[in-house]
Length: 85
Image 1 (cartoon, rainbow, N blue to C red):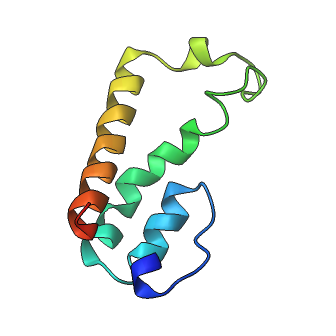
Image 2 (image 1 turned 60 degrees about the vertical axis):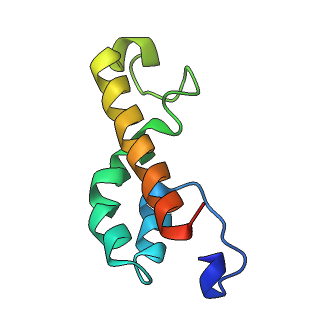
């Protein structure tokens, strides 16, 4: 987004950021929905009181972690490829 003249680019929401980037890249727009799952990990996994009736260890398991890592890796790889980084 910076390369397209946007400034500042702020926020932590993968969904919002990829939606904005999707204005410039069809691939980013197409992947937004899949990547938006990562937004659900931002607060609850970092704070013990981030879940209404439990703790992260009771909700997030190895399968969920592996899926999140794969989505994040795809996002990093896509952004790197599209920006030449």
